[in-house]
Every structure is written in C-alpha cells, then in structure tokens.
Length: 221
Image (cartoon, rainbow, N blue to C red; front, side, top):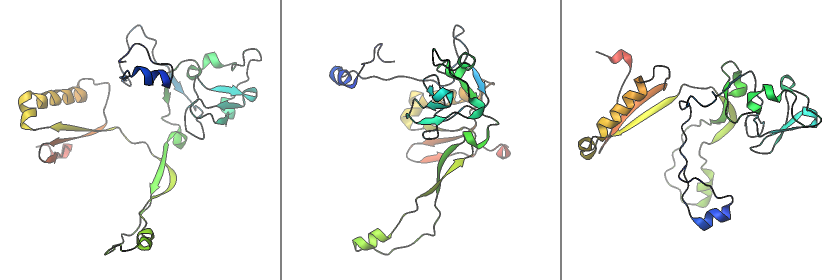
C-alpha cells in the first residue's frame, strides 16, 4: 500500500486527495510464519447471478437452505450436497468450523474434475457473411447496416495460461541495458522455478516495427 491508512468514506477521500495504490502478487511465496492457504475440494456453491463463490462474508438463512452473495446481494438456494443446519443460538452453520471457505478469506479451490459448472461464460460471436456497401448516404441506410454482435452466453472451456512478452528494442533501450534486463527477467520467469509453469508464451520486440518470433520446438536446428 502507498499509505498506512485508507479513508473510511468517499467524502474524506475527496478531501484529503491522497493517491492510493496497492500492489498484489497472486500466488506469491508465503512467509514461513503465515498459515498455508487451505485447499478446498468438492463442489463449492456459486452465485447464479454474478458467479461469485460462497465465502466467509456470505450469510445463510431460512434454516440453512439459502445463502446471500456478498458481492451482488442475490439470494441463492443451497445445493443439497452442501446443506447444513444453522445453530439456533449463533445462526452459524453447524459445520462452519470444518469448512475453510467459510472461515478464512483466501482458499484454493480444486475444480479440476468439477466440469462445466466452474467454467466461465462469455458470449459466442455471431458469424455472418461480409456485406460491402459502396457508400452510406442516408440515416436509413446507416441504420440498416448491422455489425456482427454477440449471440448467446456459453461456457468457455478453460485454456492454459498464455503470456506475451513485449520487449522494446530501440537504440536507447539497448544502450541503457533495458533489453538485457528484460531478457534476464524473462529467462528467470521461464526457468528459475521448476515447480511452476507460465503455460504457453510468445515474444515480440518493437522499435519502429513490431517483430514476432516462431518458437516451436520443431524449428530447432
């Protein structure tokens, strides 16, 4: 964080005019004094409206049969396989202490074999034949031309992580050592930690032109 304290409301933030930024590093190596991030297996309920996961900030009601999403406020039905009764005194789930996702703010969810329920959704693009128009001379003609747009929501199959490295190769970048530093950083990202993988990657360089590089193994030699 760029500051040790955050304004509690928008009015105070506008008054003090302090620029606020935060740096996040997903999957960073944890200090030894921190509790390891728990891994949760099995189906974890997701909000049918915003697709958010059930979490420690969600609330349960109706005897444990519904849960309210903390992101969008939508009330969801608790799946039968995730149901648990609520304690009549505390109104907490009786199994809450045994479920990491309901006790801590960060968990890793193993959805390797969970199927399409955990796939993200996006609109499928429409495919139409191109139409060539010599000129648009009226509003009616302009309104009659429709661009291809999204058609329907569909589940998108997960793909490997893809990374594109862009390296500036101007004379100034080369002379300043920026290119060598970028290459060293890319090499470290690719080979330094054998326990991780950045997935598929590509490299481009740019100066007055952009250059792409074929990196297939079959091209070696």
